[in-house]
Image 1: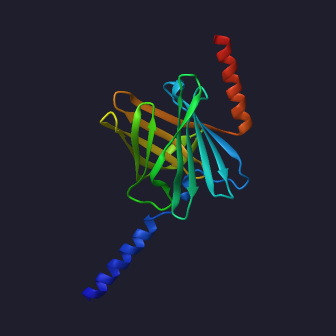
Image 2 (image 1 turned 45 degrees about the vertical axis):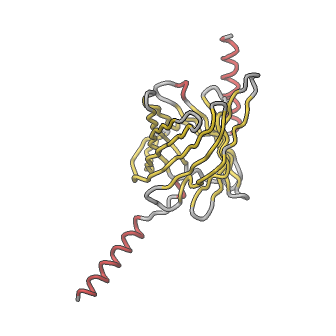
Image 3 (image 1 turned 90 degrees about the horizontal axis):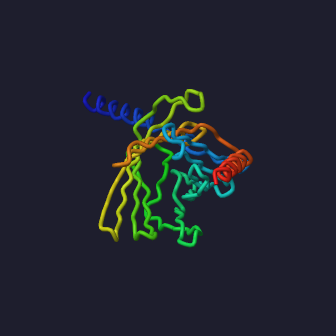
Length: 235
């Protein structure tokens, strides 16, 4: 009798585990069959100067995406290459950009150490990490992600169910003999990708980005052109 009860208990545990181990691939940025580029417009509701555009280029043949991130003034500050594999999105390349003294922009290419960006099956925690050198010295960056469940949000005037993550960032400034960290709460909606984040950086306060629109390349170019024209008028 005890053996039967034990076997039954094990079966129930296995069944329950299978039920909660949901595949969440559909909550990450989709790869479009036609290879269309989508630009995600994120607004900072407190200070528009901290708003961003994420230009996501999908390649259905290579099963990969490239994300170019821009500040509110359309300055590109980061490029993120990812490969979609059987178990998740893997980091292929990480590039930052810094302005040189002569006004040109220089690529800062990082070396990838760990490459788990977004896993298709729900897991307790995973991370990606990179090493790079810029004008301030050598750095190591680690982003550790933990899934904390589903929440309801209103995004672009629609109610969506979003998957919530706690992202912990760790930065090791090697040449400065210093370390610091900050935390971010990220939200992903099915069929869209990231729709919101809340980032708390020590001594800087809370920074929030909320998805307000998904643009095509023509609309993105139009917004950039309008911004540049307004900037010319201010000079």
